[in-house]
Length: 230
Length: 294
Image (cartoon, rainbow over all chains, first blue to last red; front, side, top):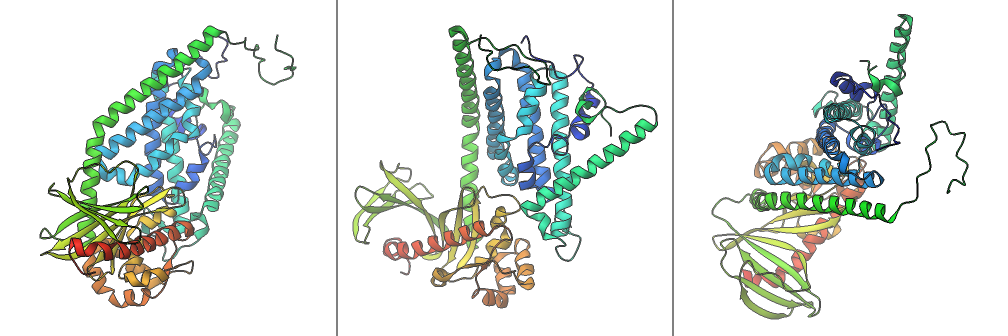
C-alpha cells in the first residue's frame, strides 16, 4: 500500500481516546453528519433509536474488525465494493441468525437490521480507519463510532418523542402531544440541526475555557489524534 | 503521460497520476472480486442452511398462534390451510387443502367464471404445478364440523414494500382481527399500521360493509383512541364486549389514518377490503366442498 497518505498519526491512539472520539469529537451524526437519513427516519421514539443504534454498533464493530484482519488481501482498487460486500454479509448473517434463533427479538429489530447495509458511517470508518490501522485500535474505533451513533439516536429520539408525542420510552409525560411537528420527518431534520447547534455551542464554550486556561484545544477535525474532550 | 488536466493549486498533496492498469493487474482485480464474492456467498449459504429450518419453524408456529389468537380458538378447533393458485394457461383457479395432520388434501379447480372442472385428492406437501401463480392462502377453522372462522392471507403495496397481513373473519363474516405479519414501513410512521391500536379499527366490521370502507385524515376521537390503546392489554373477546357501544359507533365511520402515514394506512385498508371481497367470492365456490354455509 505505497503512496497512500496516512490520515491519522502513525501511533494508534488509545482505546479511551478512540471511544470518546466516536461519541463526541467525531460523533457520526452530530459531527460527521453521516447516516442522517436513517437517523431522521427512525428517531421518532427513544426505543426505535436504541434498537437501530445497537444494530449499527454490532455491524460497525464486526465489519471494522473483518476489514482490519483481511486488508492485506483486499485489492486497493476494488476496496469499496469489497467493503460493501463485507457489510452486507454481516447484516445478512445477523438478520438470519436473529430470525432463526431469537424470533421475539427479531420481530422488534428485524426492520432496522436490514436498513444498515446502506449506512455511510460504517463504510466511511472502514475506509478511514479500519483499512489503515491495526486490529485493536480498529475494534475500539468501531465500538466508539457505534456508541456515538447509538448516543446520537437516543438523544434525538428523546428530543423528538418528548416534544412530538409528550412521552419518553412510551411513558406519557404530558397529557397531549405538545408539538407533533417534531415526530414528522421534517421535524427530524430540525431536531438534528438544533441538537447539532447545541453540541457546537458546548464545544465552543469548552474550547474558549481551555484557551483561557492557556492550553489551546485542537479543532474538532483533528481531534482523532487524541484531543477528545468530553 | 495522461496528465493533461492541470492538477496544481489543489490544497492537498498532489498525488502522482496512477499508471495505466496492466493486463495482469486487471486479472488480479477480477480475481480479488471473484474470490470475495465466492467467500461471501459461501458464508451466507452456510448461515442460511444453519438457520433456515428454525426460521421456517418459527414462521409456521407464529402463523398458527396468530390464527388461533385472532379467532379465539381453543384446542378443540382444527385449522385447514387452503392454498390458491392461478393457472394462467388453463384459465383456471386451483385450490388445494393441506391438512395439518399430513393426510391427503383435496384439490379443486374452477374456471374463472366459477364452474367446477376438477376434483381430486393430492398429498399435503405436493409442489404446485409449473407456472402456477400463488394467490395467497386461506385458513378455515372448524369446531365440531362447523366453521368457526376464517383467516385470509393478503398482500398490499405499502409505502416502501409489500405489506403481508392476515384478516380474521368470525363465523358470521365479521372481522375478528387484522394482523400485519410482514412489512417494511418506516418505524414510527407507516409501521404504526402494524400495531394493535391501528388494526383494532377494523374489528367488528361486517364483510358486506367493507366495499364502502374508506380512510380519513380527520383526527381520531379521543375516546376511540383510548379504547384502541387498551387493545393489546386485554383479551380480544373482553375488549369487544367492553367497547361494544364505541365499536358500533365507529363501525359506521371510516378508518382514521396514522398521522404522517396516510399512504400506509390507505394501503392496509384497501388490502383488507380486497382480501375480504375476494374471500366472499371464493368461499361461495368452496363452501359446498369444505363444509359450511355459503
